[in-house]
Length: 506
Image (tube, rainbow, N blue to C red; front, side):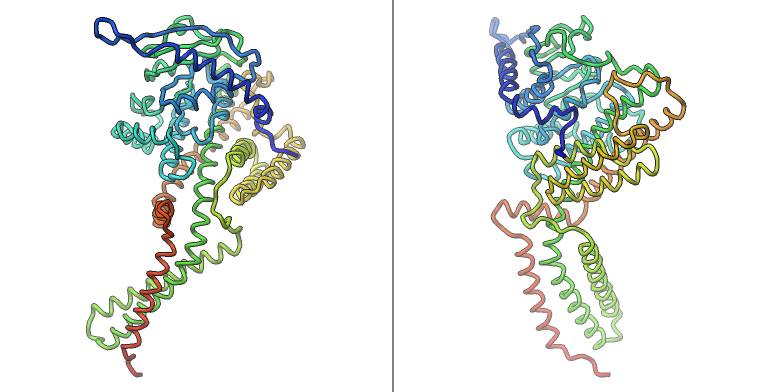
């Protein structure tokens, strides 16, 4: 069974790519037709233009076309607002965005109960991608983003500090929207953020208030897709608590999948380096620390009355034992797990999309009971293994297992969340509300846990060495090999010094 994206839309986009390109080219011509300013009496005045344009005949192409428009805005260093009537389309638009560019796009729901979590997750995703500095954060758009953050360094630090505090009732910094070149969200939130943009695209026109169907403040050009774009309910104002919680889970589930992908990618990148580090460095470190411990012991034995030598000998022995234990622990862990790819971990965009879409469906924190959670945990563990091994077929097999289990447990699975506006009409019960509330809480807690784990990972000495090795590799150097050669020289020197010292008899 082949893995397919949500609603089967992704597999069809390859065939429709020329149509998407035609749609986006038309939008770009509309935006480019109007200059940002014109000269009147030597004074530049902003020109604001508003035009209603026809929506594509094939409405299924609107979301991928909006994602392509976001990529074009980033490539041309233009700021873009995609303004919706509600939160309904946000998960679909977020899924359609280029994975490399997703952290540069602020996809923010207007629902207060999900907005702060989504914002913190996006900040964590951006911070992680900047820290990793891998191939998926290279290119002109990322260079422009780094420059934007350097210019607004105080705002960037304030946003990170706000996110780290994690206080639900604390509002984010007022100008947070200005950090992101592309912003996607409902009109009410866009108005509150008041972040200016070069281009504005209004969608779900039939549901937008009349006051919004005007030139966007300070925008170069505002386009509005004509009425008729398919959408769900007009807002996420709760009809009942189950509707509100399902909508929240839909948004948070998207953020969770993005963060699980980022975490798995960071771990996968480090795994290959860790394996090579232990092959080249760990054994040499054990040998060198052992020699230093022997030297310190002999020096202490020659001068037993010197307390400093006694302390030095004890410290050297403890360091040697710690190095040995750490290497032994890694060897046992490596023996029980999979090996990292020999050429390093470089997952394709297709592999990343498959993993992200799978994580949205099978994540253990979306379970409805302990048995369901145990099953999902097994599936998620296997999905992580397949992803780190670059095993597309393995991800397909996990998806097939998920489908088989899902069809056999339709009445108990909470992971298949209905699309907004298509919830079951049956009357909700307190048990339904409690179960959904518990699921939303677990997702929030997991998002916080991933952020904490990423911070711990990036703060480790091993990751610092990994980052330095990646910089050296871009300069044509092999940092680990250089370290191994230095250690060989230090080992030879220690052996030579040890040979010169006579051990104390007795």
